[in-house]
Amino acid sequence: MTMTRTHQWLLPPVLFFGGSFTLHLLWENLQAPLYEGFDSFPQHFWICFKATWGDLLFMLTIYAALAIVHRDPFWIADRSTYAHPATWIITLLIGVLLAVSFELWAVHIDHRWQYTEAMPLIPILQIGLTPVLQMAVIPLLTLFLTSRFPTRP
Image 1: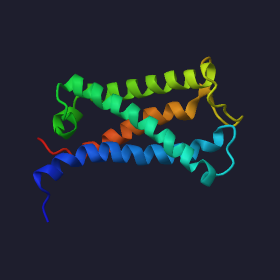
Image 2 (image 1 turned 90 degrees about the vertical axis):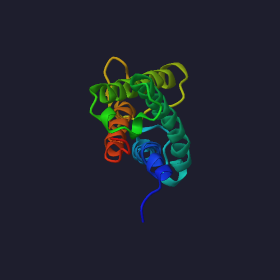
Image 3 (image 1 turned 60 degrees about the vertical axis):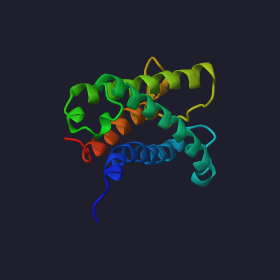
Image 4 (image 1 turned 120 degrees about the vertical axis):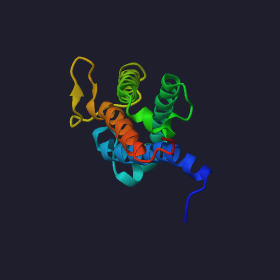
């Protein structure tokens, strides 16, 4: 069975956002024990599920930035965009900047959450390393996986 053109066009964005959601949900649950108040995975699953929607907003920001850089709202389906270094550099920079900014606000200004002693901290900033790594690793991994399925040459 062959895919229709609509299905071919939808595959890259579905992989980007669907894959990202899945990876972020997994990461959020795996790092949950590093936060104060964690009792069990079942208890915190829904907290992590809600946090994953915020992660998806960060991914949307990255997507929009790349649409501007490539001057194409459907850049994700174009094979040549993955060969451009800016695609990878901008993804990493925006991901890390968003994570650092949000963690600084959530921990030091809003006091939204606290870390356990097990959380590795970034010196000077005193924010968690794992949430920053999350926004460095998952966007790049998602981009890599999506790059395997471009639909335009």
